[in-house]
Length: 59
Image 1 (cartoon, rainbow, N blue to C red):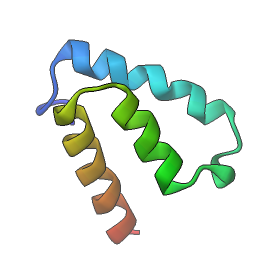
Image 2 (tube, one colour):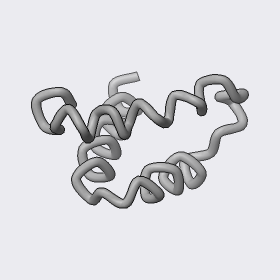
Image 3 (cartoon, rainbow, N blue to C red):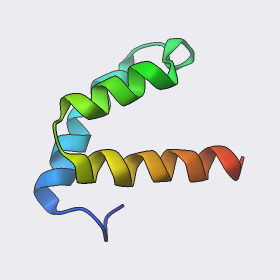
Image 4 (cartoon, helix red, strand yellow):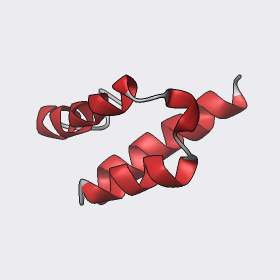
């Protein structure tokens, strides 16, 4: 993601770090996507969603 997003965008994604403190098992895909959409940046949503799908498929 580093090569696809600007430093400012990466900092905005970093703001989601608070999700780490919650029970990650309770986090649904819908809730995660809701948090990403709340950043109101379509590029962040696209890049992060693609990375999440790739991680899921490579599991």
